[in-house]
Image 1 (cartoon, rainbow, N blue to C red):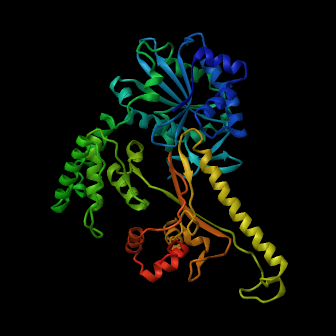
Image 2: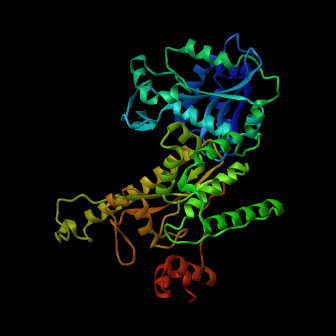
Image 3: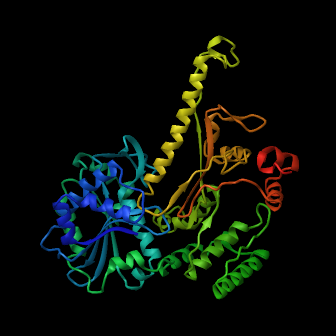
Length: 489
């Protein structure tokens, strides 16, 4: 989805008349997206002035196409700025620009080849190197836009840090980031001419081959030949992915089922059972490769990050460029969160002095403040997630364990066990799975265009039976943890 789509002449005019940010905001609202906080609005006003200085050049025709805020399909990622057209030789190119308002950054560690540390959102944070961001976005577009691939359109990634100071350039140009900035060069505050010359190497006139932005926004989204070849090369000759005995049988059955689905356009689900070490994951990776090779959209999805990271490491040999090529194929189906606000007291546990008494006013106020802080942290997480989805049609659903949309209190234990460093929160449970400290909350995070909070009023017999089987509970435990949902039993 592209939010703003105009030619260069109109873009320059919108910036000159100081209406560019308002137009972007209006078009976001027209598309039904939730966006336009003050900070984002100000960033549009600021950055677009600098981009106008780059494209407002007599060597670049007024009918060159400009796009702002392009949401990459099937992701929550977005490209800040796109310049579309052809060069002096008639070759079609798409220049994607990652815009940053940073003034400085620093290397995090010599072993962290993707990240830098800089000041954003009122704090020092570890974020992706802008050249890597631009490069990874370009690879996704190359790997999944069939029309761009078929027409041989060249995608050129770069980054523009228009406020970045010369004295800190060395941090971004450190040798550990060389593979990114050689492919996706970055330009800083005093490199306006260099950036302008770079853009004009690729785009000076409108493409003679039609509306290229339409291809970007409405083209076919499917794995392209370049992604198919890349994945096949990585898997080929890797013994760990060889199929043995029953694995090969299951593989053929899955392929046959897929072909039947394509033929009659009906959905089917295949469940393959087996204990640890029986080769289910190896089979899944082989199926992933086959489906991608057949130009079908596919992904390896698992709730645990360990197998995803293991297969990525095996397939890429820890090569960063290969990793950027296929990382989007290995995904998590959901996220999780946990929040806890503890009481800080100099009194020993179990103290019965007046200030520690549950009936004491100060104690009640202390609990109220902690609960409010936990709720505020949960609300902040909502805002933080939505802020990163402003330019997409995706929605955030954050059901908390033990509440109406997710009434199973025992899931709290599972969430804490799966969260990285979850034990460091110091959360424990009572026999009924109430959380201690009491100002604690945990749950799941789902991000999808149709995400919503279900209203669960009762559970059918079949649902109840499946619940007991999946969770390994007795009927007594099921009644205990599902409470009033089973009031008729």
